[in-house]
Length: 329
Image (cartoon, rainbow, N blue to C red; front, side):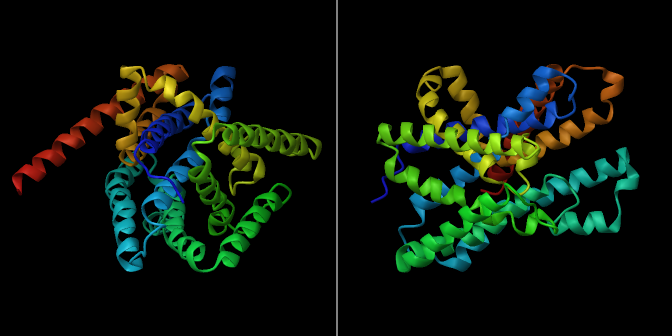
């Protein structure tokens, strides 16, 4: 049986908070490719998305996979949770882009942004979560009623991650990305079964480090890019094994970091509001990047400023929600 959530939620909350901070760092440091420290941090912080998907899959497995899901109600709930914040973000972001770079705002850009299939760069993650929101209940059903389908899909997903080591699709990666990303569901399923067995976790960590290393060498020998980002769209086995190794490594680090009250409170804040922060930080960063040449800031100054303003705006948003709730109670 899959174990209860009580203590595990602390781990999920902690790594989700780390993931959104890492994502902000990625989006900042990408603008400083000539800075060795920034470019190194940019590459090695690419574990953010695997953590988000792992957390989503893990919580689904713990909460939903053991009971019969009312599919319509589940999909509706996920749609509202994922799409409404995104459209609120667009309401502010589109006018900002029009003000900064009006040539970007075309009818195609607007339509793709609204349909979550293109346009705004960060929409791809929203689309991925929507795809997986539809897929997870199907995997939950297969796990309970047809193990052949459940494990057959695992083989297909694994095969796609291996295939993308050598080939990339001729069409947009967005239409196939759900397939290799599905491996995070099976990884979360395995973790939920063996999370208490530290020997298994250590062996798995060593295994994924080995896989990441071997696929890294394979890319080098074939003359392909070994940048994690270049192996992310769609994700291949090199990128996914790197992400899984990072998750397992954090399972050892988290208990020590969470003992420090300041770090625990900070990470907890970023975890709770991670989806809001995902949109807020991108809006803030877009403003500063437009004037970065004039500001002449280093990457760490920009990171600190974006982080600080994002936290302030998130706090304002929290207060507005509280005010709205009290007003209509």
